[in-house]
Image (cartoon, rainbow, N blue to C red; front, side, top):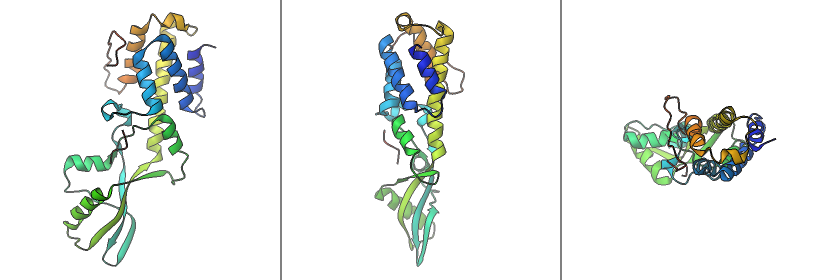
Length: 225
C-alpha cells in the first residue's frame, strides 16, 4: 500500500487521530519536495505562530462570555456578561476566539471533562473594563469577580473535522489526477499540479468558488482574548 492510500485510510477512520495522518502527509510533502504542502502540514502539527497565517476555519469561533458577579449582597455564578456600548472591534475580540493550536492540542482539549464546554479566563485588566462598562449602564455596586470565554467543544470538533475533510479531499484529488498507485518518484515532477490541487482543496476551499494556481511551490497564535 502506497503512502497516499495509507493516509486516505487513516482519514476515513474517524476513530484514528488526525495527527497520525498529518505526520504521514509531512513525510509525503518532504519526499516530493512540495514546500507549500509542507508548510501547511507543519503549521497544523505544531500550531500557527502568526495569526496572519491562520486559515479561515480556525478564525473567529464564537464564544459566550460568562463570569461570577457580585451586585450588592447578591452573588451570581456563570452570569452572561454584557458587552453592549463597547468599541465594536474590542467587542468582536471578546465574542470570538482564534485557534492557532496544534491538532494534537485540539484533540487533547476534547478529552477534558468540561460538560461540553471549555473556559478561557480573561486578563484582569479586561475584566475591569467590562466591569466599568457594566457599571455605566446603571449598576454602580456591581463587581465582576472573574470572567471566561466559554467555547463549545463542538467548535473544536468542527475545526478538526474541517482539517480532516480538506486533507481527504486533497488526497483523493491526487489519486484522481495521477492514479491510485502513483509513486513518490512520479509525483516529484508534478509539484505545479499538486500545488494547484492544494489551493483548490485546502487553501481556498471556503465556498467562494475561486481557486488559485500559483504555478510554483512558493509559500504564497495564542487564543485571542
